[in-house]
Image (tube, rainbow, N blue to C red; front, top):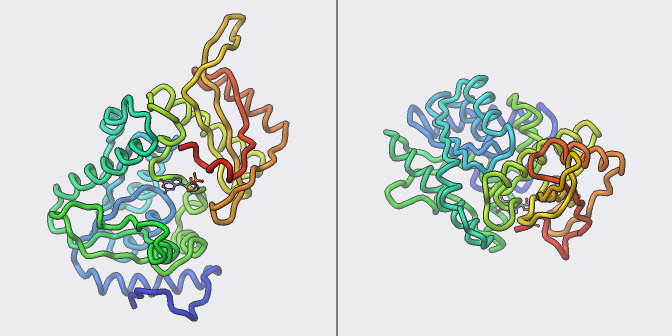
Length: 327
Ligand code: XMP
């Protein structure tokens, strides 16, 4: 059965048996809907698109064509994980597009946050459309729409990012197998489908990726400093048992330098700003009081291991007055 709306009396999916019942029902429904035709999916590696991919692979195998666009603004290890999990472990029909140069060239010298977002979003659709045009016989487009997306677009809170964005020559029928689920239910289904914990429990990550954590004009070296410091932060939070406990944490490398000392010599390098917040709905957020020993360890590792960085700062500002992201 394909639902357009969440049934009023539907129980919240939490236990593995409930997740399995949903999977069995959806796999049958997807097979009936798709038959022997082909489905296209933009697979970012985020929770929603990953669960949709895993469900469709279970239902129609290689009739699903996944396109993973690496826009050069992903976190360390993310594209590799997508390839490992989907191509190597699930035998997915996966097209990997390394578009990093293309995005970074377009973004060169662009300082305005809204223009940066527009360029990233527009370029993403263009790259995805180019890949779609190379393929024959695609009838369906799968999307990781979830129930809060439907509710929010109905209330006019946010425009829902659906197929509306694709050019006119690319019109597909939509397949939205997790449309009636809440986020925690999507995670339960993903776990039951065998996706790794690191993928299912991922913290929220904005569409424009690390681009909004590299304020002002993005340069490759500063972007690399964001990526490396973020990887260290995630590693140290995991070691400290904070993974899954703190809602969102990341680093930002602002576009200014300050004086420091390295190996007895004057240095003139960037700071890394650490942000760690807790929230339930992302409308407001409180700063996590991270332990000082952890902070010392982060300062020590980031200043030693990340090229071009000589200072580490902690952002103590709740939302409001600050937003969670810097741009
Ligand atoms: P802000 O910065 O508005 O962020 O306090 C609230 C939450 O939304 C995430 N965020 C985004 N997610 N596309 C997304 O998919 C975006 O453009 C975007 N901007 C912010 C942010 O990471 C935080 O969890």
